[in-house]
Length: 217
Length: 192
Image 1 (spheres, rainbow over the protein chains, first blue to last red):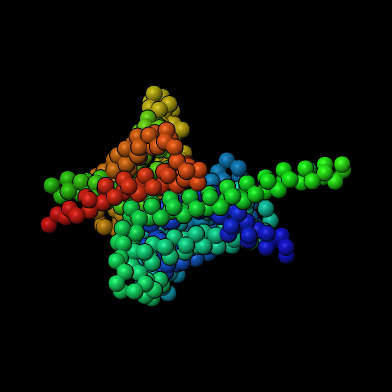
Image 2 (cartoon, helix red, strand yellow):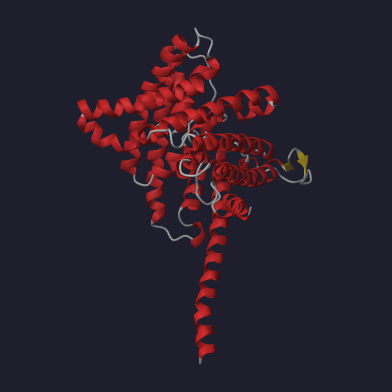
């Protein structure tokens, strides 16, 4: 069980597909105008990611090496079509606001990257867990961006008023330019945190031998 | 005239990268030097024009008569993947000069969402054959314009001294944001 928890932490924080691995930029930039859209997009991609990881892992001994990318794309696009039809039937307003980005999950590099790097080499259960944790990491990153953009751009969060009416709405954050700016600042913050953590670890590592020498003396 | 308006809209007003975010991965990944960016742009233009025609024909003459419209995502991505492979073999065999120039970018194009979204948009807006080809071509021109201009900007950024946390990707994104602001002035233009 511990192994799976570690996988989950890796997907959501240490190896976050968007904030650390910098994959899947198109949906990240395009669908984060509000938290609702961001969450919907994240969940749709997570569903596809889990299903395609399970399937590719099951078929990993049967898919010939030379045509594996084409085979992955067919499997992924099958699941994407299923998710698209389900969303059209049950969450129509979300389906409309995400628009073309639902079929575009097919070419989302996160899904293909996990298929190639993980599911094609590992058994079913870890692959499913990998899909879940990477998908949750993707959703998490999208929700952070969506929250920042929705609050600054329209003073609302999930459609609820959080800032007073007198707050001047910075419409730029809901526009395309705001997507690039917000993601730039969020990734800069993540890099800052990573740099600090690394530095602390290095200092600790440097301190230990020194202490040992002192003890020895 | 209608086609000219459509092309103008696709290149500037609804630029694939700066207003629609289709094709951001290669845009952020390959735009480090102006000449590689131009090479990538040309390869994308080539593929998008041909795939615009091919996917339109597949939709009109295979999917529509069989009432399999809901399979268009699967069908289009297969057509695009096959087409990219075919173009690569064709160029290597018959136009080696062009192959050496564009060859390395071709495999990347299958997973470029700009190509798939141009094909899907052409169906969504029920374009005629000519319009679909013109749309694919001009959307790709818009992509090339964006990626080349941005590569020039990026070459300058690399020489600048930024705070450590901002170095690399964040600064690239912020520069892209500023460029997107410039492109957003085209969005006021409308054709009656």
